[in-house]
Image (cartoon, rainbow, N blue to C red; front, side, top):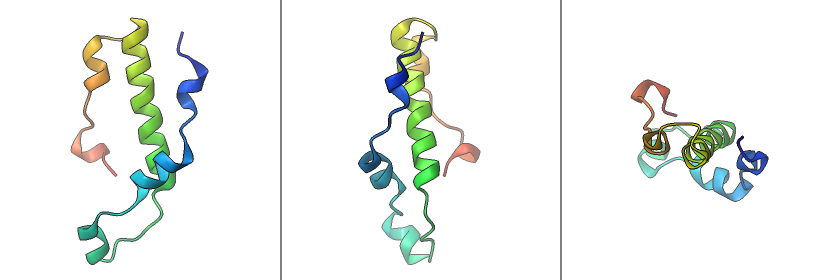
Length: 71
Protein backbone atom coordinates (compact mmCIF):
# COMPACT_ATOMS: atom_id res chain seq x y z
CA UNK A 1 0.00 0.00 0.00
CA UNK A 2 1.27 3.46 -0.88
CA UNK A 3 2.15 5.73 2.02
CA UNK A 4 -0.44 8.58 2.23
CA UNK A 5 2.36 11.06 2.90
CA UNK A 6 3.47 10.51 -0.70
CA UNK A 7 0.78 12.94 -1.80
CA UNK A 8 2.04 15.66 0.52
CA UNK A 9 4.04 17.79 -1.89
CA UNK A 10 5.77 20.71 -0.17
CA UNK A 11 4.51 23.97 -1.62
CA UNK A 12 8.04 25.25 -2.27
CA UNK A 13 8.82 22.22 -4.46
CA UNK A 14 5.75 22.77 -6.58
CA UNK A 15 6.40 26.49 -6.72
CA UNK A 16 9.95 26.08 -8.01
CA UNK A 17 8.78 23.52 -10.57
CA UNK A 18 6.01 25.85 -11.70
CA UNK A 19 8.40 28.72 -12.38
CA UNK A 20 8.61 29.36 -16.15
CA UNK A 21 12.00 28.86 -17.76
CA UNK A 22 13.82 31.96 -19.04
CA UNK A 23 13.03 31.09 -22.65
CA UNK A 24 9.35 30.62 -21.74
CA UNK A 25 9.31 34.05 -20.09
CA UNK A 26 10.97 35.56 -23.16
CA UNK A 27 8.21 34.06 -25.31
CA UNK A 28 5.60 35.64 -23.05
CA UNK A 29 4.48 32.42 -21.35
CA UNK A 30 4.06 33.38 -17.70
CA UNK A 31 0.96 31.35 -16.79
CA UNK A 32 0.56 29.89 -13.29
CA UNK A 33 1.55 26.24 -13.46
CA UNK A 34 1.45 25.40 -9.76
CA UNK A 35 -1.46 22.92 -10.10
CA UNK A 36 0.26 21.13 -12.98
CA UNK A 37 3.56 21.04 -11.10
CA UNK A 38 1.88 19.57 -8.01
CA UNK A 39 0.22 16.88 -10.12
CA UNK A 40 3.49 15.95 -11.84
CA UNK A 41 5.32 15.76 -8.52
CA UNK A 42 2.56 13.64 -6.98
CA UNK A 43 2.65 11.19 -9.90
CA UNK A 44 6.41 10.96 -9.66
CA UNK A 45 6.30 10.29 -5.91
CA UNK A 46 3.62 7.62 -6.45
CA UNK A 47 5.75 5.85 -9.10
CA UNK A 48 8.75 5.85 -6.78
CA UNK A 49 6.70 4.62 -3.81
CA UNK A 50 5.12 1.89 -5.94
CA UNK A 51 8.53 0.69 -7.08
CA UNK A 52 9.87 0.72 -3.53
CA UNK A 53 6.81 -1.16 -2.22
CA UNK A 54 7.16 -3.77 -4.96
CA UNK A 55 3.73 -2.87 -6.39
CA UNK A 56 5.18 -1.62 -9.65
CA UNK A 57 8.18 -2.61 -11.73
CA UNK A 58 11.40 -0.96 -10.53
CA UNK A 59 11.69 0.90 -13.82
CA UNK A 60 8.41 2.68 -13.03
CA UNK A 61 10.40 4.93 -10.71
CA UNK A 62 12.39 6.11 -13.71
CA UNK A 63 9.42 6.40 -16.05
CA UNK A 64 9.51 9.46 -18.26
CA UNK A 65 6.50 11.40 -19.45
CA UNK A 66 5.75 11.38 -23.13
CA UNK A 67 6.21 14.78 -24.73
CA UNK A 68 2.45 15.20 -25.11
CA UNK A 69 2.03 14.72 -21.33
CA UNK A 70 4.51 17.46 -20.43
CA UNK A 71 3.67 20.86 -19.09
